[in-house]
Length: 332
Image (tube, rainbow, N blue to C red):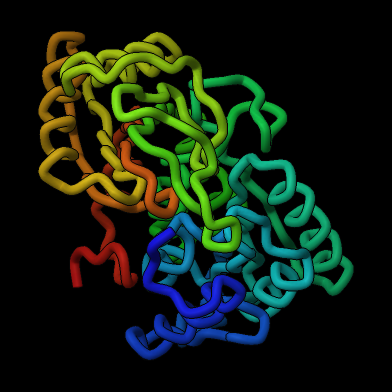
């Protein structure tokens, strides 16, 4: 294992310290491992928090700021944060309008956020929770009951964050988050495994001539393992089950999100974007907005994921709303 780290046990705390130095516009609680926007809580605004295991950067801490999250809790690598972290974050972003928890559908995340929400409610804070479960690859996996929460998490945080930034009520913001999740589908493919620093060896074995179709963001098995193929064929393997699972037709088009799993460079992502765009054009699906880059990763895994969001006029306006975070900035 070759990684730019000191001690594997210190990776998360040292990364958060580096983030605090690089982004003084944030406030980072190194003790509780929580990233806050510096002006939290914002009086009268719905607070948004999310979180999960580290190793998926920039998710979630990279999306803290104006127009997205108010706080993000960092767990150990590929391990959920604990309820105490989530409760602390919830209390510190409550500006009097309630707090929305955005939760990826992994057993530990769901259980711990539920516990934190109950504790916050007992302290008089109104909390709503939205669980993201957009992965069409498998119904149940190593970490989940039901579909996994993957790329749509970024879209939920962006669009619900915009709604909160506009001063909407908690029920309205939660409603936007649920609509985005219901209208999104994702699929991923791995070219290589990833290596958890504390483990020191690849999570699974994948030969130089194989790919894993439908991989999870923690290295969970996918639908099938097959020989490496050209980008065009891989794009078809990824997008076919997405288009089969939900009707993406309509005048407002879709948001096409092509994501690097961590080690795949932009040159390859744009090749894949071109192939996805050709498939969508043939299917009569119009691309209304796009996002390309490493936004929800799996450490050093090579591969990519694709997410489609069936758009409407309101969701597109929320997409265009200004956002100012370390990992996504538009309109500022």
